[in-house]
Length: 367
DNA sequence: TCTGGGGTCCTAGGACCC
DNA sequence: TCTGGGGTCCTAGGACCC
Ligand SMILES: [Mg+2]
View 1: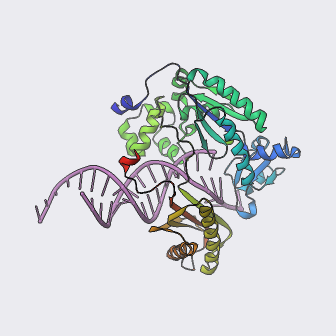
View 2 (view 1 turned 180 degrees about the vertical axis):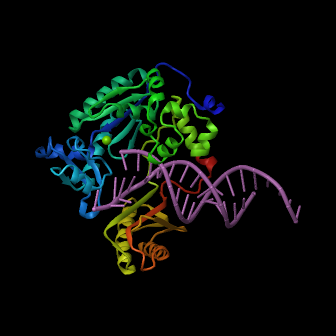
View 3 (view 1 turned 90 degrees about the vertical axis):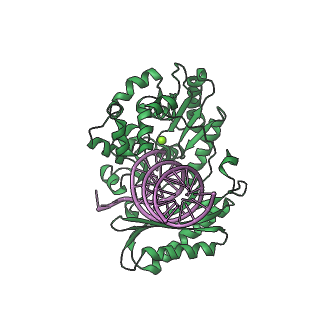
């Protein structure tokens, strides 16, 4: 309880500083915006049944049929046979995302992007936050041509809860007073940071709402979730989430590429040749960013879905693509035996060396 | 009809150093 | 010789996010 008091923010009535912006059905909306014949129709962006793909995003017309993100494409087609399936065109979505970010930055410099279609904005003067949020919403809709849902509150998880509250095209403000009323009843899986796994663990103990969580002993919560998550969620349920400082323009810590094969493969030669393509892709991207990696990792998912990873760090950065290929091949050798069939193969480069940011600085020098 | 891809962060144990 | 602990780096796995 001491930590609760020590680390939470002081109670103030007017401290709404955080805006959460969520573009509605982003990928599908970009497609509908750019092709009027798709408007008003169920559009599903993502993989195809043939490639063992899933739904990335679907339009609200498709959601009426029960189609959801992360659902197998085959199931989506069964639910909504009239849907139009489109492949994901990341380059184009990234372009639109960049325009969104630039527009947001014209309202406030403190912008944190979350993926391509969400952002937190931080406003210095809380008296202006709601007005800024309205302007942002109006400008996004007008200049980007896609609707969005906006939430305003005094901390990230609550602004996020607010934008979720009413969508699409929503606008919701959660002040401290409303948060106190809402949180006890909120189903835990609706909170940012609580996924299906944690929700299930808690539900087994009869903990299903913010109120349940709040009234459970910290000792029990720590035993179930570990100290980090237990405290984070407890503070949120108490309406006083931690507010880490704003981090804009975060740099990549890893670059990865993985692929689910159209059919399972056991043959080492074939797997090695797929691995080569993945390594080529990932090394090209790292080079393009002018970086070098010190760690090469690979990932193998077998047909039974068991997933293993192997990584190796070299004290001197990998400068030559050939060295990365070599390491990746050796790591793959540890995970395949020519008999087990593989459904997914992946490569990650991490421990990235940014030339303008010396690695060797001690903690006290970085501050 | 099974179950994507690109990421981040956390945990836990072992090595190694002070 | 034994005990004790902190910090960092590495690996592997796992949860979560969009
Ligand atoms: Mg969205």
